[in-house]
Image (cartoon, rainbow, N blue to C red; front, side, top):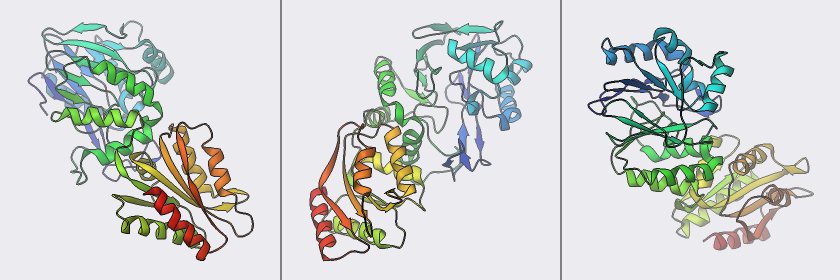
Length: 385
């Protein structure tokens, strides 16, 4: 696939993977993107997952048309992008490897070889001329690994963004929900903890004339780039993307579920722009994390379990806290037949989180809803609105 006259796409689509990184459901597969720049000198940008090495090399050879690459730029050492570095060097032994110092250390860990005779170590602001194309390197530590670099091609004004601006889904599958849905789930699942580091890279990117963004997952972005940069700024600053409420619940015998659904119904009838309801025991937890970060308000409805929180709710809160959940309003619905303590336990979990506010109303159910707890639901709905 031709991206520009000199930049070609040589990546692959994976329809065999069921869980990306062993935990994220990817019903539309996954793309592992790789690129080659053909100039006086030739630079390959990243490799692909180990299962697709031969296909990738075939794609590369087709575009090389008999030429040999001068450089392999390794932006990110996660194995879905770097697994074929060693295979590549066997096929092209004279090619130099361009990477950060930390990336070469990781190559020693993955391949028992730091390729010392091939190393071109780059850091922030370093440049590499291919002829008419000049590559400018931008360090991006902890977006989302410490060794990451991004690469800006000043001729075609293209930013090779490593895992930044990535998205779940293979490129040969049309996504009816558009870019943002699976890009958001990808961002908050994989990169979300590192908002400050993403902010630092966005500040560096602001000084570049970017006309296209070429990530290692998902589609190449060539139009309306302001939208993508703005939404990444919102996500990485933990801002509110959309007005609405995420209601996440766990339920043993259905009473807590009933309360959560009643609240959701009250919010919808009162005109809440969006109410996203998630059963944490059955629905995709990563979708629930995505919704919790997308909207400015969150309701956690759960039973007291072994003197604590129901396990799937506890895990969900852990996912939020470890991703630096902040700047949100949280309401609580707790249930307990003899000693309800879920609300207290939930508040304790968010003790170290920044700018978390809890609603004044906590709904407490003792076994099943009654007139008192339904009245509390009404108060909670009014607060959330």
